[in-house]
Image 1 (cartoon, rainbow, N blue to C red):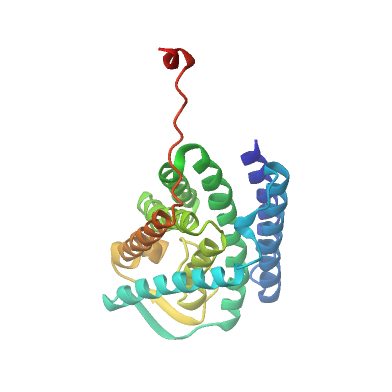
Image 2: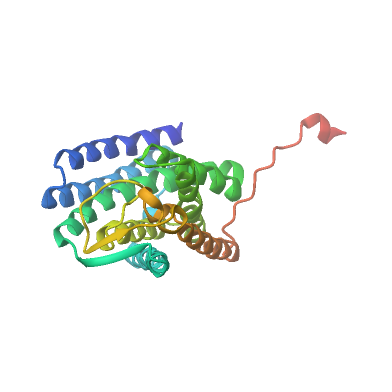
Length: 275
């Protein structure tokens, strides 16, 4: 029940915020304001519903240490995508033709903030965290990662391959980031840095969706496994490799810190114990 109550509370804010952002049709100041407001309100509602349903302080979204964790995540996310797009460009799959639009980048900042925060609260803050308590870190990581990838099947230009790529490079990686740090600020930072670098800086398609041009006037082309095709660089093999590498680093950190939750074993029946 707590899972359903928490999902329902965050989903209401997400639906309302998405409707508002969509209604303003990329108006720059309104998209920025509504996007940031949706992100902030989602965090507040998540904290409130966790307190009510779990009778605890939601330390995973605590304000203390949030700025540093968020910045660390941002650097990882932007660095990951910069490395990916550099490799794609090296093989001729990405080209910068000039400067793009600062206004478009600002609008994308608000849009990405809302989308990223809501997704992290739902998939890592609620689904991964609660399911992990039942089936352990490894199975929860696999299950919620696959669900995250499957949720992108409804995006424009999506394919089974693109959903699989998203599951590996993002679903698994972001769950591992939460397991390693036990806060949502690092996954939010990584996710936002990755997404904003794609659309807000390099002007590539983000998960198959069209959006305003970012800071650079960039175009992708070439084979699917190199450029990601119409879905965007997230369907590139380079993105998958980057995601696997960062996932491995977060998993190593989680193991080192003793943050891996084992699979819960069912207690043996009383008759068996008596024997």
